[in-house]
Structures are given as C-alpha cells and as structure tokens.
Image (cartoon, rainbow, N blue to C red; front, top):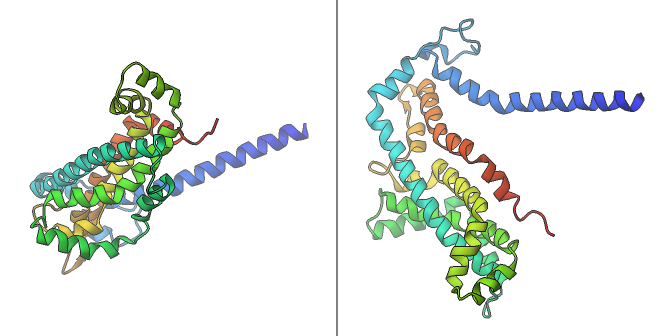
Length: 283
C-alpha cells in the first residue's frame, strides 16, 4: 500500500513538473501573440489577459498582412529560397561525405582527422567569419544576393550534416553494400540505391534542422544583405524607428516567421525523432 501511494505521488509530481515546464515553454509564444493583438499604448504595460486587461485588436495584423504585404512577402520569399536551396545542397554534399567517412578508409588523413576538420569549422564564433565572407563576396560582386547567403549557410551547416549522416550510415550493415556490389551495382549505386533510402529518416531530420538554422540565421544576413536579399529575421529586427521599437509590429512579424518551420516540423516530426535516434543504439 505504501508503495502504491508513493508511486501515485511520483506520478502527480511528474505531471505537475510537465505542466509547469509546458507553461514555461509556451508563455513566450503567448506573450508575443498577446502583444500582436494590443494597441501601441497597451504594449508598454503588464496587461496579459485579453478582454480583461485590454481590448484585443487586429489592426496590427491588417497593417502588416494587407498594407505592408509586398515588403513582408519579399523577406519571406528570400528566407524560403535560401533555406530550401541551402538544405538541398547541404544534404547532397553532407550525405556523400558522411557515406564516404562511414564506408571507406582514407590513407593520407585518417577518417577521424577528416571528421575533426569538418567539426572545427563550427568551433569558430560566427562573428569571426563575417569580415572574410564579406570581403570575398564583395570581390565576387555577390553582396546582397541570395547566392551569397546560400553559400554561407551551406558552409556553416555542412559539418553538422556530415556528422549526423556518418553515424546513420555506420548503422547500416555493410553486408548490404557487398551484396549490391556482387550483383553489379557501382559504388555510387550502393550509396544512391541502397544506403540513401535506408537513411531516409535521418536525411529528413537533418534537412529540417538545416532548414530551421538557415531560416533563423541573422548575423550573416545582416552583413551580406541590405535590400534585394533581405530575409525575415532582418525585417523583424528592423521594426524600430526614432520613437523606439514597435513591439506590436515585431510580434506580428515574429509569429509570421515562426509559422513555416513549425508547420514543416509538425508534418515530419516522426522522421525527426527516428532520424536523430537512428545511430544512438549500438547493437
């Protein structure tokens, strides 16, 4: 009886902890949503409960979605184009590199050293790379272009994908490769026809993460884009004027920017969990 009571108490404690954690995680989104529905005069106070502390309004949404849609859609299109193309390039290059490190042994450099070299590209603070990238793209006349942002984001996200895909490919039995080679399949055919389909869930998980990282990237976009290639994070940060930050407009743009990654993650969430845990268990 004592054990049953103790188990029930532990269950209650767990549920209470989960509820508090959920509130802690959801509250920032509620704050942003509430701010987007406030008049400018209401945003500077601590009014949180709609219809009690303040009267909700859709004026901010109408202003952004209807009146400023050409400007907002430009940032969304740029962010979407950069994120999608970056994800495609990164997955192609990262899966090939990951498969090579998982299946072949290199002579001049060991596989471990090659992997460390890839990971070392993520050890430098991004601010250290801003000036070199800016000077390089200025010489190439690519400043304020989507191509520059795609190249930068592919470079900084590639090591991450290589690490994930390498671990996933290492979990696929090599006997499948050998059987395919015996049947006359080429080395690339083994990768494309055998290994890649089996690693599909990991590929989707890596793609979603790269898409999200690229979508949210701010520092390089701030340095390399100022008019034609402006992304949605820059538009969110650009809501200030001489009177200060327009929090009500920032909230609207922030919610609009959050929607694409969230919707995408909801559709493929089962692949994310399966892909990231594919190489976690060693049999």
